[in-house]
Image (cartoon, rainbow, N blue to C red; front, top):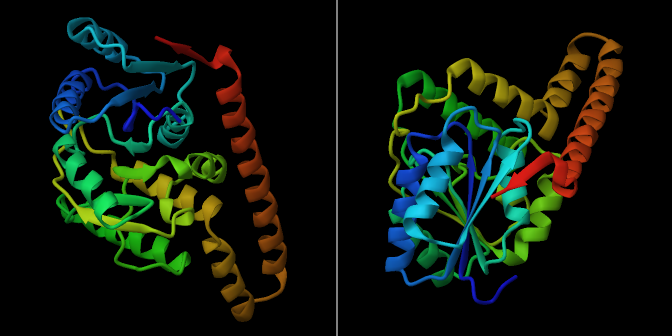
Length: 277
């Protein structure tokens, strides 16, 4: 940790050529107004558009030295990019934010104040469901099931717009290294939520419904015991064949999560997997 840096901003990005420049402008404006010393770490998940050049253009125009850009050699996904970015932070506080201005930088002050005033380890932004009916309903169901499976507050809405203390950094990386979804409550007891502004993605479509369902099923299968619980219930209704299914499910999960862990470890340690600008 660098005591001279108040906050590290981590931006996982992919094909954000139409929004990344505006996001950086907004971040610099808000952080300057707050008089916070900061660094920005952008992890580009092997974008195929002009994202990197837009970031370079901003760096040249602002003549700033506190932006680090890391470009992955392959597309590893948002969680991996977030973990990689967090592993490179030096600030006392760490903020993760999306690249398309859905998460409004004007809310950083509110998150920052909420964390300090309430002496929290972490605070996660949330907002009222504000999309179409299908997306809203699916989001509510996903959050409800996710919370119930963790024995957590069923009304909690987990998002990627989060601020946390750097003392959680090592635990954050280690715990989520083999996970498909980041829920900071898993490592932070002093956690709270704060309602914030939520914008439509800038010049980008929302993630498709089918993709969202696939991500949710991936999470439920690998990060929770949802399928094991379903299978146990079926045992009582059917026969012992489901005991074998439970065993095979556990083995598949263990192997898949171990492979994910090794892939991310290798990404972090092997400089051939990324370029730094």
